[in-house]
Length: 427
Image (cartoon, rainbow, N blue to C red):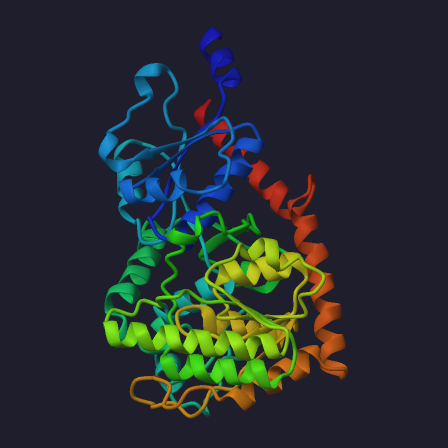
């Protein structure tokens, strides 16, 4: 009896294993904070480089959240506080085997929308032929349980529609799904979304128990020098984006790194020259170019009329939570699916129309022209019906997102139930 009483009084202890990349670290850190707020002790497990990202950040880690790197070999079992659960982010499927060997429950924290998880699941479970047909841009595909939307090749994750281009990544996703379904049981998946936003997608997959625990934001806690974003647009696309912004004749705020990963000295000089010219043009319409900014500090400002974004899931969630309409400019991965949902389902923005693509590779044959970018800006910020619709919907989703994380909200309740389950399993 004394041992049982001690177990009941002991603080739940979760180990969070996360891949050392910005898109993984962000939701993992903020989910850890949510667990701490609900009384858990959390140890964030990452590589040495992942540790450096956190230690150089501005975010304040609360008491109860500690960071341990792989090389430490840290073991707290001897201190009387063994791990009760292992939460891991995508691509770290080895964590499941570690948990099994140690008789430790494991749970995936999916950092993309539930809709994308459904798409990947169907790709490897009976819908392969449909995905092949979908390589024809004119073909539209319906997926079971996702009744409110149909998908073309432009709407599917690039890894799914052109797997040969991304063999390592698509194989990682396939392995992840195999791990989740190999035991024949319904695996629990924590998703960085909230029930109200993706109610269909959360229930569409009968093989997975998807649970909304988001939105897990903010994402910008790196110092400017550490803002290592993998998205770099081409020189031509940068010029067309600039053309669209300036020709819209509206003030804009553009975060663009000075180097843009330029390696050749000649290109670096050209980039500096272009930037100086662009800064002059920006000033003519009240615009401003900066090397870096805290996205979550800029977006809430009353002067922001819309957000031109590549539609990475973290950025999309931030916009939803802050009620900012979007001009969706997806590049690859889940961004195309996110952009589809932004325009067609949630109706909080407009997506740029991508020119004809090469069917064999999916590569954009020509860049999105400045006139198309201006068209989207005029729709979202003009005086027409589209502007009113996206603003009304943006405000609606903003309120629902905030309600989800309030005490008693869907995500707050889901996280609390997860913690209660951890406590129950250890008794």
